[in-house]
Image 1 (tube, each protein chain N blue to C red):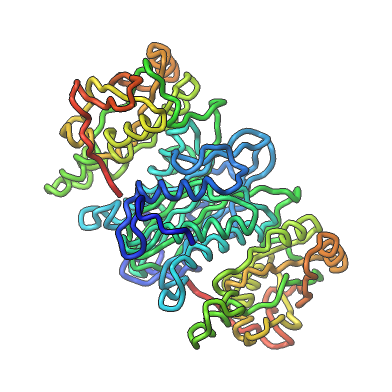
Image 2: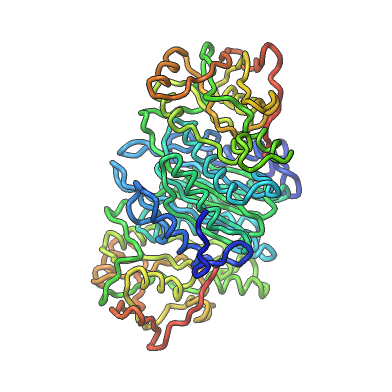
Length: 315
Length: 315
C-alpha cells in the first residue's frame, strides 16, 4: 500500500529490522490526522488529552523463542515479562497504570491459564488489574499486553527533553536480566536470585512518577540495553551523553550491563541532580545513581572517554 | 499458579477451548481488587471511570492461518481485520474510538509496513488513528490491536441488560464475510464485492453510539456468528430469544448468516422498537432490522419456532 522505499527497508522477500521498520512506520503515521498529543510512535507510550487529565496507551508483544528461552523457562514467564515490558513503558513517561488488556495466542497444549495468572500477578505487583483480553490459537505462543495509564505527576516526560548540562541518572544497577539468562543456561535454579532478575523484573512506576514530578527532562526504560536506549534519548533530544560509569548488578558483566536489556530500570536526565535525589528520598525510593552528563555535541556518546559500544538487543 | 480444575478446563498437555478458558480467566480476575467498573473480561471492552468521562479499552489478536487464510488473501488483510475486530468491540458497547496501538509479530520476509498501513487504513475509515505500537519477529504472523474508546452517548451498553419483551435488532444483513471466504476459495477475485465483505468489514461505530443514546438494553457485535453471539447476550442477561428470521446477505447462505461470524453488524435489544428506528433515521443511519423478541425463559433460543442451531466460530 506504500510505495517501495528500498533505501530504508527491504520489501517483501527481504529482511526487516525493527528500528528501520519503525522509522518507516513513524513516517506513515505522521501523515495521518490525529486527535492525540504529538507523542506517538517512537516514544514509549501514546498520549491522549482528556477532559479529566491525560491518559496514556502502550503495547508490547512477547514471543516464545524471541523474548523467552522456552527451553529454560516456564511459559508463564512469557506473560509476566510481557506485562512488565508494557508497564515499564508507562513508567518511562512518568505515568501510572490504570489497567491492562492481554491477548494470549498459543497452541492447544499450552496452559493459557498459567500465562494469564502470571500477567495478573505482574499487574498486581504494580498496583493495577487485568481488565480484559482475547484468546486465540497459534503455533507460536505470544502474549501481547496493552496498558492504559494516567498522568498523576501533572506532566509527561518523553525521550526528547534532555539538555546540555543535565545529569544522567539510572534508577538501579544493570545487567541482571542478561546475567540471569546466562546463569540459567549454565544450570542455575529457576529460583536463583539472578535468574529471578530475568523472570520477574520490576517496572519502576513510582520512580518514573517521582522523576516526572521532580522535573526530569527526559526518560526511557532500559529495555534493549542502556547503550542502545541512551542513543535513543540522545537522538530524540539532539544531544550527546558522556557516561562516567554504569552500575553493574552483582553477578553481571559490564557487557551485560551495557547491552543486556530487559532490566527495566529508568534512565533519567535532570538539570538539578540534588533535587532529584531529594525528591526520591522524600518519596522513600532508592537513591538514583549518577552515571553521566548530557553534552551539546550529538556525536558525543562516550563511556569514560571511550566511544559507547553499539551493543544491545535488536528485535 | 492456579489449582487444577479438571471439571472446567484441561491442564497442560490437554486442549483448551476459548470459551472454557475465558470462564476460568473470568474467575481468576474476579478475585483481584479493581479500580475498573465491573464490566471486565466477558464483555466486549473494559470500562474505566475517569474524571472527564468513561474510557474503554479492548484488544483482539488476529493470527495467520487462524483468522486469515493466507493461501487466499494478502497478509495485509490480517492487519485490517484485526483493527476492525477491535473497533467493533468498542461499537458493541456504544463507544467511539480515540486511537489504537498495534503489535505486529512476523517473520523477516513478511512486509510489516503493508500490515501497518492496512491497520492505519482501517482506523482512518473509522475516524481514529494508530498512536503507537510494537514490532517483533515471530514464526507466525500475528497482529494484535488494542483500542482506547470514549463514551460519547452518556452510557455504556453491555450484553447483560436485555429484558423480556425487548425487540431484537440487527444493524445489517449477515453472512457476507463467510460467503466472501467461500467465494474466494471458489476462485473469485480479491476485489469481488462479497470477497470484500471478508477482507474489509466495517465496524458499526455510529450505529453503536446511536443505539446507546436511544436506550438499547443490550448489545453485542456479530464476531462469531449471530447464533453464538445471541447466546452470549441471552446468558449474560438471563433471558431467552425467539428469532423470527435473520437477514441473509445476497450471495450468502442461511448457515453462513447464522454461523459465519466476522460480519461485525451489531445485535441490539430495545424495549421501544419505534424509538430505535426513529433515532437511527434521525442519525442518517440505515434502518435497523427487527429479527426477534426477548423472552423470559432462558432455555428458549429459537428461530421460527425451531431450536437455534449451535453453530458458529469457535476459536
